[in-house]
Length: 230
Image (cartoon, rainbow, N blue to C red; front, side, top):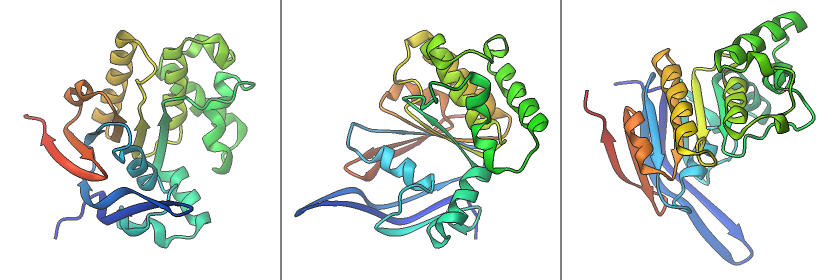
């Protein structure tokens, strides 16, 4: 039996509002291996962001199991899932979700708040990833003093500061011009080549060229899976 880094079995997610039921994920099975770069594409409402939030241990499914590194995510307590997210997962969001009154350095250090590292170690690790994304000279600026592309780079630095094996990106290029989007994709590709498993949700099918495998979803189901030719 082959063990995959991420295993999704018979996954369903239903949202209920009054008498209305909406099925976001419908009997989905998916396996992702260590070191892959997987894009998840589909139209708005297809279920791709819901899938990412479930894999990210933030959204309990209505049915089914999600295993990461053989751990059953939703068999864990909420505290255990929080610890898991801190250790295993780095999140990049389309809206950046930077704290406006914190500097770049302070924003990047946020995921380390629960790690128990000392202040000097946190500063060292945060500055290392800020330098990595090309913003060493802007470490003490506030988010509104940065361009959209620079804010996305801060979001990437924050996602990787704890050195998580898995990076989850939700439309990371959605608010960027095409040139800046290519720069961000190049950075994600480099992180993937260095060993991070990357799962990226995008509405833009042209981003599939950067992935090792592309999954298209429709109406909460997997429509196609394409492997990039070697």
